[in-house]
Every structure is written in C-alpha cells, then in structure tokens.
Amino acid sequence: MNFPFYIARRYTVSFSKSTAINIITGIATLGIIVSSMALFVVLSVFSGLREFSLSFANDTDPDLKLSNSVGKSLMITPQQENQLKNSKNIAVYSKTIEERVLFSFNEKQEVAYLKGVDDAFKKTTPFEKKIYAGEWLKPNTSQVVIGYGIANKLSMGLFDFNNVFEVFVPKPGKGAIENPEEAFNESPLTPIGIYAINDDLDRKYVFSDLSLAQELLQYHPNQITSIEVKLKPSASEDEAIEELQTIFNNKVSVKTRAQLNDSLYKMLNTENIAVYLIFTLVIIVALFNLVGALIMMILDKKANLKTLFNLGAEIRHLRAVFLLQGSLLTFIGGIIGLLLGMLFVLLQKKYALIMITPSMAYPIQFETLNVIIVLGTISILGLTASWIASSRVGKSLLE
Image (cartoon, rainbow, N blue to C red; front, side, top):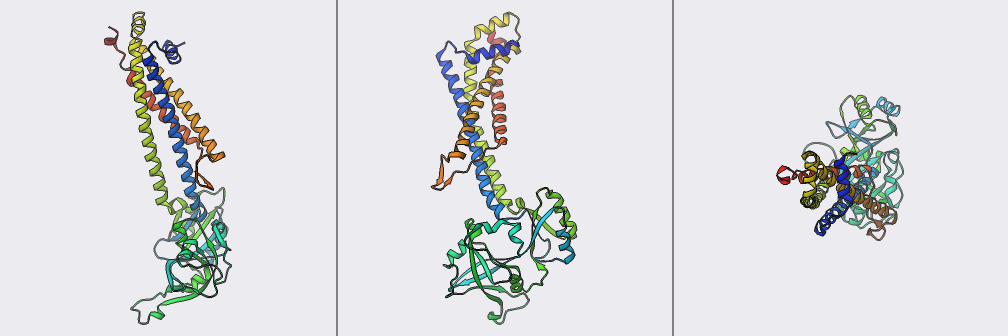
C-alpha cells in the first residue's frame, strides 16, 4: 500500500491528542458538509425555477416561428404550403397574424395585440389549455379569446350583450387623415373565452380567427405575418430551419423557442451563475478552516514527520500525506453534504415541505448536472486548499 495514503487515512479517521485540533477539524468538516449541501439545494431550486418559468414559454410559444426578414407580412403560395405539409421535420404548422390595435368596451380602451390564428393553431401551441373561463374560439366567426389582464382592466366578462366589445385597426395608406372616423377599420367582437398565464401575456393578446384579422388589416387571403411550427419528435431543429429557409428562398427569419424568449433565458442563466459564484465563495471561506486544521495537524505531527524523514521518506511523500488527508476530508464532507442535499430535494418534491402559496410548493428539480457541478467544485477547491496547507512541510520544519 502507498504509505502516504495509509498515513493520511489514519490521520483522517483517528483523533489527535490535542482537543483544539479535533475541534478545528470537526468545524472544517462541518463547514464542507453544510456548504456543499447548500450549493446543491440552491442549484436544484434554480433548476426548478427555471423549469417553472420556461413552462410558460413551452405552453405559449411554438418550436419555431417564421416571419418575413424584411417587411411586416409575407405571402405564402400553395406550393409552399404543400412543401410544409410534406416536410419530414414539420408535424404541423399554423398561419398567424399579429398587429397592435385598439380595443374598446363600455367607454374604456386598451391597446393590445390582435392575433389572428387558423384552426391548426391549437395543435402547434397548447394555448387552449390556459383557458380560465369559457372556451376556445370557433373558425370563421367574430369570436375572440381575451387575456385575464385585459378583461380585468376593461371590467368585462363573457356574454355581455348590453355592451359591445370593439376593435379599431388603422387603415393602411399614405397621407394625412382628413376624417378620423374613416381612419380605422372597426368590428364588434364576441368574447367567448378568457385565458390566464401571467401578467405580461394576460395583457398582450386577443385571439381571433385568421380571416377576421385579414379582413380588418385588408390583407389578401394568402397574406400573413408569421408561421408557427411544431416539429416532429425525431426532427432536428437545425435541419428544420434549413428546410424552411429553402422553402422560402432564404427570405424569412426563423426563431427557435429559446430565441423568442432570449431575455428570459439570459436572465435565468445570469442569476444561476451569480448564485453559483456566491455559494462557491461560501465554500472557499469554509475551506479556510480546512487549511488551518491541516497546518495545526502538521505542527502536531512534527515529531512523527522527523522520524519518517530520518527513515528515508522524501519531502514530497510527507507533503502527499497532508494533501491526501485534506482531499479525503473534503471528499467525505462533500459526499455527506451532497447526500443530505439530495435527500432534502427529494423530500421537497414528494412532500412539498416549503410552500410559496397554500396550493403551490416551491419548485425544485433534481438534475445530475448539479451533482457533477457540486462534486467538481468541492474537489477542485478542496485539492487547492490541501495543496496550500501541505506546502508548509519543508526541510526548515524538520530541522
């Protein structure tokens, strides 16, 4: 057996004659356990928050969204539609129109996006699952689905036949407006459903049938603003984007779900990195105790080290003893802390120990990547701290 490892293992599992050294070593080990547990729990919490936040994007955004790279709208030909239908990557696609317009109800007004959708929209984006009251609109009607935020601000509900819900869309054209009454295309709408997702989205969209939006915007039957795509389970995202660019002669912009929520992804990644660095600093502070404990151990075992040196042990072997001892303490403490953290995460997922609201548990997610990150961080920092302490062993100490 390698004698530095043998001695390091004996020093790790046995108590020193000095009570102070035992206390310092115990505090150092406890610090490693607590800090590694805290790091894993916090990373798991942020994984849960990330999944919770992105669940809204998964329910409201398609896999891919195609729009004109130059103008506001694009023309889709029957040939292009056939290519989309026969695509090996695309499961289903939906033609949509988005335009910022004015809505009016009972002398109250609100500016939001009118989003015209076809019947395939429900298949590309599971928006229908977010209906809070009522039902989804039917094609070729004046029915609309509004957000809870818009309904709340306009103080409106469903099936209110005493007040008219209207939409006003600016007419396309050039020049000055001489008669304000002729500047808008307007139409009465019938609210048939209310959706509820979050504050931003609840105030953003009013969904209508695609033909109604085309009529209000004076678009041609084959004129739209975007195409939303749902990919087949086995499809490659990059291949699908390349195929769409080929179909539309590289004149369109294709965005993935991550690109549609670019600011959200950046915010989540930045917060995750910031929290990781903060708790890594906590681990570094905890490892200062380990450095102190090893140095105290070196001074306590000075006579034994002299004996080993006189028997022929080299300085590098003596340094390896404390390098290995520090690494063992770090590894054992890290494993214990990680196991405790994993236990807490599993208990929170199963029994909802901590609640945000009476009906909603604090989101947390167990991920193998977080285990690797914690083990890697503890191992690297522990090895560095042990190397710093073991470097105190030299000829001047043994003279």
